[in-house]
Image 1 (cartoon, one colour):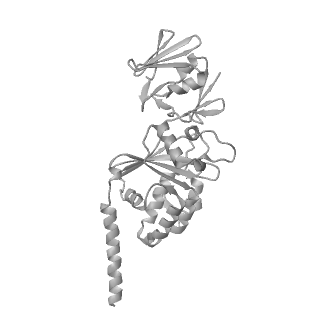
Image 2 (cartoon, rainbow, N blue to C red):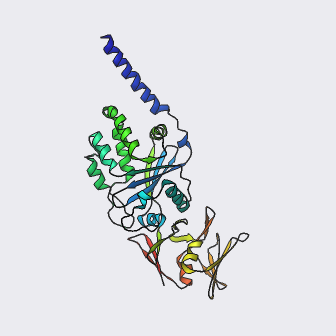
Image 3 (spheres, one colour):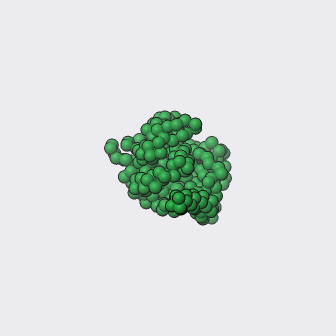
Length: 325
């Protein structure tokens, strides 16, 4: 009888310690904005997103597929940049592309979802009980340019965590933790990962970042420059991207914040913050002013590239700006 009481007592202590951990565990990293690069690798490709944590607010920032391809660069048949690029290279590219400091990363094969769900005996999402394979099927993109899924990786992750933390699954946690940490590439430690889960977010949301890609001569641009951004309904691109496409010469005047592009007989001047463009000295209105983005000048794309003799079209289905002569 005494032995049984001791076991019960030890179990209660164990439960209390876990409860205490999830009540007071350090919130250090999550008190300031942090960004985690999330990469899911599939058999033929993959997907990436950035998890932004500010206090107890978790926001999954998703990139259009075309923008992902612009960041990852050109790869041959059978090669998978989501898997073959090093995490250092992937983090560096995303930091340049988005202008954000990424402190954490997680890369996993999406088939891991099947194994974790199997250990849990299924996962409930939106009131529906799903197997791991059914979860994976719902993660497949629909084929539109944004590559939206019926479920996102973040929603699946949230459901898996909620399932794992149910009391009846506590005895399965050690095996699941071993499975996950033996299958993912991450700079999270067990303590930091549990600390993130212990945040108990008061708000979670998913946003799609307004970063289209530029398609020129069959390839996505830029690969190592900041991604284009949409401001007031207009696409802004790095000034260096215009130079790459048009072979125009560029001058930058720090004092006046003026950029001058010269190609053949065309001279174009734009000033950061001013909604005016000067073409050979003639002023024309802009619907969006040039901006400085992490030290790089972002300028309205269409009006400038058309003045330099190129044609531009917006391909909504692929979330792409197509350029040709």
